[in-house]
Length: 282
Image 1 (tube, rainbow, N blue to C red):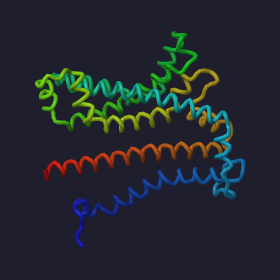
Image 2 (image 1 turned 180 degrees about the horizontal axis):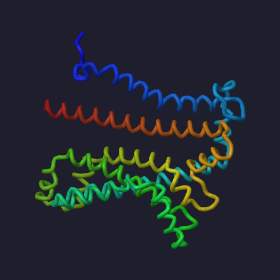
Image 3 (image 1 turned 180 degrees about the vertical axis):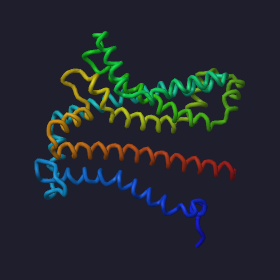
Image 4 (image 1 turned 135 degrees about the vertical axis):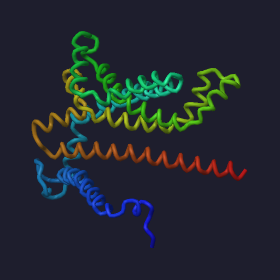
């Protein structure tokens, strides 16, 4: 049996690379598996290996109004923030393709990506200072939603820009030549090409917003908690199996979200290949 091109290209470096990859995987998965295992314990405290097997900690989380209220708040914030970030990131990526100057494109691209490099604490303190001067933003989640959305915009922008870079640049001029106005060009030409990338950006944006805790510490109203903030509070007060159970449920939600997107993406790619084969044989 002959070696694959990848194996031949790795040469004698193959074994060290495989070892490093294995160790890295273990460092990621083993702590997670420990967290999952500790959520099964029958005791009221975290212990590993778990003492017995019970799902009482999951029942405690799902039947506890404090945990469920925090989960609903996080869903609401992540949902609204994702919609805003997808809209802004997509509009920014579409606008970038309309700029003729390379310098302008470079500056705009940098401005959209810069929020990824801003320390969350500094960003949160700045938004908190804004909330102190705007009383209308102090007793609701508006500033938190907007702040989380702006943090997620770069992820959407990068994904949509990647999709637009793969599109045929001649399609827009052709559509304009045939009499289509710019809203029709966006609706009929641009959006169908990037809908998959928009969905990918939405998945990343939702995950980033749902899991963000720093902004929640500074911007949530008194008496309101997001799920990450509730988990942070629980870790400071008492290390109970409910905390690891909540962590496991959040991880399962993330896996389901990413798995659903992967399934959609694979089916969409398979459909595109079938249509391409039909067009080639026609």
